[in-house]
Image 1 (cartoon, helix red, strand yellow):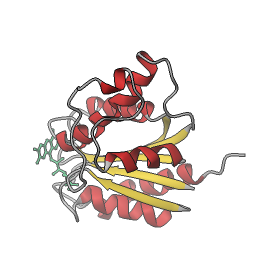
Image 2: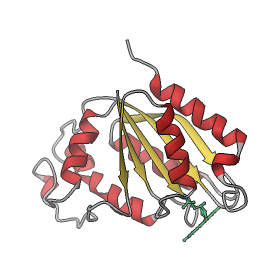
Image 3: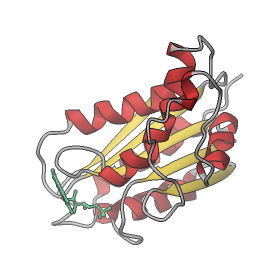
Image 4: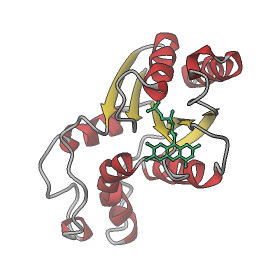
Length: 184
Ligand SMILES: Cc1cc2nc3c(=O)[nH]c(=O)nc-3n(C[C@H](O)[C@H](O)[C@H](O)COP(=O)(O)O)c2cc1C
């Protein structure tokens, strides 16, 4: 089983990274992490190459990530909430999924044939609006042919470290269990 995890936090030992570490400990098979702030992936420049051609004209680390997306059984999006959204840096990386949307809309192709399970982890300092970040994560999972099987909201991360919160950790355990289910 292969799980690809996108992390949207700049903090290498922050709440999002720590929750991902706990998730990885509980996942079967291989895991690969793409860290939005530290990978070599440029944002989509809307060059429109993918309106007519498969893939992406921008040659950087995303080319490998496209292969990883194809192979993955699970895809997890883990991000802090910034201004009620996923972080801008994560969205910059994810803008490169536009090639998948163009494949469907303009070229009438199925860009990611293999169905995947999806997971979402959203960390937030406060306890405000959730819907926007959750919906964005679901749209991105959908672009990669993944459907969410579990969602962990880690609230009040600026007051209590997310990994110290029993309820949040129970959510991580549940998410790992859902992602580990073997398809017949
Ligand atoms: C630029 C910025 C915007 C933020 N916006 C929100 C917000 O809209 N709602 C919220 O609850 N917390 C917000 N926060 C707090 C972060 O979600 C919180 O500190 C979180 O723990 C950071 O995740 P990390 O520890 O994984 O880096 C914001 C933090 C920053 C730096």
